[in-house]
Amino acid sequence: MKYDPEMSMLHGFSGKDDTAYRVCCLWVELSRKIFPDYMHSKTPQIKTLKKSVLFRTMLKLIKERDFETIGEYELFIKAQLMIFKRINKKDTPVLIEPVILTGDPAERRWFYWNKLVANANKLTKQVYSMQDADMEYDLLESLKEIKKICGDELTFEKYAENSSKIKTSAILRKIKPIYIYLSEWIKKLPEELKNDIIQRTDSKSFDKFNVDYAKEIYNNLFDFEINRS
Image 1 (cartoon, rainbow, N blue to C red):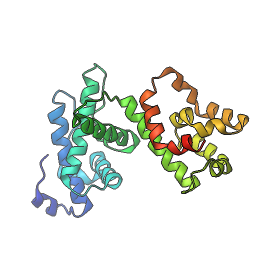
Image 2: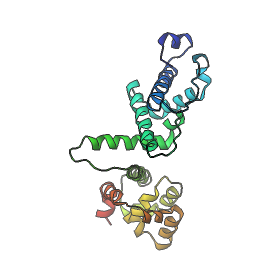
Image 3: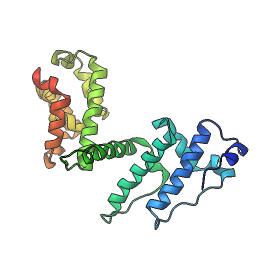
Image 4: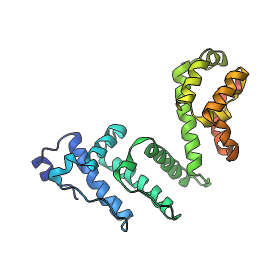
Protein backbone atom coordinates (compact mmCIF):
# COMPACT_ATOMS: atom_id res chain seq x y z
CA MET A 1 0.00 0.00 0.00
CA LYS A 2 1.43 3.33 -1.06
CA TYR A 3 -0.16 6.71 -0.45
CA ASP A 4 -1.76 8.12 -3.59
CA PRO A 5 -3.25 11.63 -3.29
CA GLU A 6 -5.45 11.09 -6.36
CA MET A 7 -6.90 7.89 -4.89
CA SER A 8 -7.42 9.72 -1.61
CA MET A 9 -9.56 12.35 -3.35
CA LEU A 10 -11.36 9.74 -5.45
CA HIS A 11 -12.46 7.80 -2.38
CA GLY A 12 -13.42 10.85 -0.35
CA PHE A 13 -10.56 10.95 2.15
CA SER A 14 -10.16 14.38 3.72
CA GLY A 15 -8.95 15.81 7.02
CA LYS A 16 -8.31 13.09 9.58
CA ASP A 17 -9.43 10.39 7.14
CA ASP A 18 -6.65 11.40 4.76
CA THR A 19 -4.15 11.41 7.64
CA ALA A 20 -5.38 7.97 8.68
CA TYR A 21 -4.88 6.73 5.11
CA ARG A 22 -1.31 8.07 5.13
CA VAL A 23 -0.59 6.43 8.49
CA CYS A 24 -2.07 3.15 7.26
CA CYS A 25 0.41 3.26 4.40
CA LEU A 26 3.25 3.95 6.84
CA TRP A 27 2.22 0.99 9.00
CA VAL A 28 2.10 -1.40 6.05
CA GLU A 29 5.48 -0.22 4.73
CA LEU A 30 7.35 -0.14 8.05
CA SER A 31 5.89 -3.29 9.61
CA ARG A 32 6.86 -5.33 6.56
CA LYS A 33 10.28 -3.72 6.32
CA ILE A 34 11.18 -4.29 9.98
CA PHE A 35 9.49 -7.71 10.21
CA PRO A 36 9.89 -9.16 6.70
CA ASP A 37 9.38 -12.77 7.83
CA TYR A 38 6.25 -12.14 9.91
CA MET A 39 2.88 -13.46 8.68
CA HIS A 40 1.26 -10.05 8.34
CA SER A 41 -2.48 -9.56 8.00
CA LYS A 42 -3.77 -9.01 4.51
CA THR A 43 -3.67 -5.37 3.45
CA PRO A 44 -7.17 -4.03 2.70
CA GLN A 45 -7.89 -2.47 -0.67
CA ILE A 46 -8.43 1.27 -0.66
CA LYS A 47 -12.10 0.95 -1.64
CA THR A 48 -12.78 -1.02 1.57
CA LEU A 49 -10.13 0.70 3.72
CA LYS A 50 -12.57 2.81 5.78
CA LYS A 51 -14.34 -0.35 6.99
CA SER A 52 -11.12 -2.11 8.01
CA VAL A 53 -9.66 -2.63 11.50
CA LEU A 54 -6.45 -1.07 10.20
CA PHE A 55 -8.16 2.22 9.33
CA ARG A 56 -10.20 2.37 12.56
CA THR A 57 -7.06 1.72 14.58
CA MET A 58 -5.21 4.53 12.84
CA LEU A 59 -8.09 6.92 13.55
CA LYS A 60 -7.79 5.94 17.21
CA LEU A 61 -4.04 6.52 17.06
CA ILE A 62 -4.56 9.99 15.58
CA LYS A 63 -7.06 10.83 18.31
CA GLU A 64 -4.66 9.69 21.04
CA ARG A 65 -1.45 11.26 19.70
CA ASP A 66 -2.60 14.21 17.54
CA PHE A 67 0.89 14.72 16.06
CA GLU A 68 1.35 17.75 13.85
CA THR A 69 3.27 16.03 11.04
CA ILE A 70 3.29 12.69 9.23
CA GLY A 71 6.98 12.45 10.10
CA GLU A 72 6.06 12.25 13.79
CA TYR A 73 3.68 9.37 13.12
CA GLU A 74 6.43 7.63 11.16
CA LEU A 75 8.85 7.99 14.08
CA PHE A 76 6.24 6.77 16.54
CA ILE A 77 5.49 3.65 14.45
CA LYS A 78 9.21 2.95 13.98
CA ALA A 79 9.78 3.25 17.73
CA GLN A 80 7.01 0.78 18.54
CA LEU A 81 8.23 -1.73 15.96
CA MET A 82 11.89 -1.44 16.95
CA ILE A 83 11.05 -2.15 20.59
CA PHE A 84 9.18 -5.27 19.49
CA LYS A 85 12.20 -6.15 17.35
CA ARG A 86 14.36 -6.06 20.47
CA ILE A 87 11.88 -8.29 22.28
CA ASN A 88 11.74 -10.68 19.33
CA LYS A 89 15.53 -11.10 19.39
CA LYS A 90 15.13 -12.70 22.81
CA ASP A 91 13.07 -15.48 21.18
CA THR A 92 9.88 -14.10 22.68
CA PRO A 93 6.84 -14.33 20.36
CA VAL A 94 5.46 -10.92 19.41
CA LEU A 95 2.19 -9.72 17.91
CA ILE A 96 2.75 -7.28 15.04
CA GLU A 97 -0.70 -5.83 14.44
CA PRO A 98 -1.89 -2.19 14.28
CA VAL A 99 -3.39 -2.50 17.79
CA ILE A 100 0.13 -2.24 19.28
CA LEU A 101 0.10 1.47 18.35
CA THR A 102 -2.69 2.50 20.72
CA GLY A 103 -3.49 2.55 24.40
CA ASP A 104 -1.39 2.65 27.56
CA PRO A 105 1.17 -0.01 26.46
CA ALA A 106 2.01 2.04 23.35
CA GLU A 107 2.36 5.18 25.47
CA ARG A 108 4.79 3.36 27.77
CA ARG A 109 6.85 2.08 24.87
CA TRP A 110 7.01 5.61 23.41
CA PHE A 111 8.13 6.94 26.77
CA TYR A 112 10.81 4.21 26.92
CA TRP A 113 11.98 4.93 23.37
CA ASN A 114 12.40 8.63 24.03
CA LYS A 115 14.41 7.87 27.18
CA LEU A 116 16.64 5.52 25.18
CA VAL A 117 17.22 8.22 22.58
CA ALA A 118 17.99 10.79 25.28
CA ASN A 119 20.43 8.44 27.00
CA ALA A 120 22.10 7.53 23.69
CA ASN A 121 22.87 11.23 23.20
CA LYS A 122 24.62 11.48 26.55
CA LEU A 123 28.40 11.20 26.83
CA THR A 124 27.96 8.86 29.77
CA LYS A 125 25.64 6.04 28.72
CA GLN A 126 23.11 4.88 31.30
CA VAL A 127 21.67 1.38 31.24
CA TYR A 128 17.90 1.86 31.02
CA SER A 129 15.44 -1.02 30.94
CA MET A 130 11.76 -1.28 30.09
CA GLN A 131 11.16 -1.98 33.78
CA ASP A 132 12.86 1.32 34.66
CA ALA A 133 10.69 3.08 32.08
CA ASP A 134 7.50 1.55 33.48
CA MET A 135 8.33 2.66 37.01
CA GLU A 136 9.33 6.17 35.93
CA TYR A 137 6.18 6.50 33.83
CA ASP A 138 4.02 5.33 36.75
CA LEU A 139 5.64 7.80 39.14
CA LEU A 140 4.94 10.65 36.71
CA GLU A 141 1.31 9.53 36.33
CA SER A 142 0.98 9.28 40.12
CA LEU A 143 2.27 12.82 40.57
CA LYS A 144 -0.28 14.12 38.06
CA GLU A 145 -3.11 12.41 39.94
CA ILE A 146 -1.96 13.66 43.34
CA LYS A 147 -1.83 17.22 41.98
CA LYS A 148 -5.38 16.79 40.67
CA ILE A 149 -6.51 15.77 44.15
CA CYS A 150 -4.49 18.20 46.27
CA GLY A 151 -4.04 21.08 43.86
CA ASP A 152 -0.97 23.26 44.24
CA GLU A 153 -0.98 22.91 48.02
CA LEU A 154 1.36 19.94 48.25
CA THR A 155 1.56 19.65 52.02
CA PHE A 156 1.08 16.55 54.11
CA GLU A 157 -1.86 18.19 55.86
CA LYS A 158 -3.69 18.66 52.55
CA TYR A 159 -2.69 15.15 51.50
CA ALA A 160 -4.04 13.66 54.74
CA GLU A 161 -7.30 15.60 54.37
CA ASN A 162 -7.75 13.94 50.98
CA SER A 163 -6.55 10.50 52.07
CA SER A 164 -9.85 8.84 51.09
CA LYS A 165 -9.44 10.19 47.54
CA ILE A 166 -5.80 9.10 47.53
CA LYS A 167 -6.94 5.61 48.54
CA THR A 168 -9.63 5.48 45.83
CA SER A 169 -7.19 6.62 43.16
CA ALA A 170 -4.66 4.03 44.32
CA ILE A 171 -7.25 1.24 44.15
CA LEU A 172 -8.23 2.41 40.64
CA ARG A 173 -4.52 2.42 39.70
CA LYS A 174 -4.58 6.13 38.88
CA ILE A 175 -1.96 6.38 41.62
CA LYS A 176 0.44 3.56 40.87
CA PRO A 177 1.75 0.81 43.17
CA ILE A 178 5.40 1.88 42.75
CA TYR A 179 4.47 5.25 44.25
CA ILE A 180 2.69 3.56 47.16
CA TYR A 181 5.78 1.44 47.72
CA LEU A 182 8.19 4.41 47.84
CA SER A 183 6.05 7.21 49.28
CA GLU A 184 7.11 8.84 52.52
CA TRP A 185 3.63 10.33 52.93
CA ILE A 186 1.88 6.97 52.58
CA LYS A 187 4.07 5.80 55.47
CA LYS A 188 2.81 8.70 57.59
CA LEU A 189 -0.89 7.91 57.16
CA PRO A 190 -2.76 6.21 60.03
CA GLU A 191 -1.62 2.59 60.35
CA GLU A 192 -4.92 0.98 59.39
CA LEU A 193 -5.39 3.20 56.33
CA LYS A 194 -1.76 2.80 55.25
CA ASN A 195 -1.91 -1.00 55.50
CA ASP A 196 -5.21 -1.12 53.63
CA ILE A 197 -3.77 0.90 50.72
CA ILE A 198 -0.61 -1.22 50.62
CA GLN A 199 -2.60 -4.44 50.64
CA ARG A 200 -5.15 -3.35 48.01
CA THR A 201 -2.45 -2.13 45.61
CA ASP A 202 -0.13 -5.11 46.16
CA SER A 203 2.74 -2.64 46.35
CA LYS A 204 4.78 -5.04 48.51
CA SER A 205 5.45 -7.01 45.32
CA PHE A 206 8.23 -4.49 44.59
CA ASP A 207 10.24 -6.13 47.37
CA LYS A 208 11.29 -8.59 44.64
CA PHE A 209 12.62 -5.91 42.28
CA ASN A 210 15.57 -3.57 42.08
CA VAL A 211 13.99 -0.15 42.54
CA ASP A 212 17.16 1.92 42.88
CA TYR A 213 16.45 3.88 39.71
CA ALA A 214 12.79 4.36 40.67
CA LYS A 215 13.93 5.64 44.06
CA GLU A 216 16.10 8.26 42.35
CA ILE A 217 13.14 9.38 40.24
CA TYR A 218 10.87 9.44 43.30
CA ASN A 219 13.37 11.57 45.25
CA ASN A 220 13.44 14.05 42.36
CA LEU A 221 9.71 14.20 41.56
CA PHE A 222 8.45 13.96 45.12
CA ASP A 223 11.11 15.98 46.92
CA PHE A 224 8.27 17.82 48.68
CA GLU A 225 7.35 14.58 50.46
CA ILE A 226 10.90 14.21 51.72
CA ASN A 227 11.58 17.86 52.56
CA ARG A 228 8.19 18.43 54.17
CA SER A 229 7.89 15.09 56.01
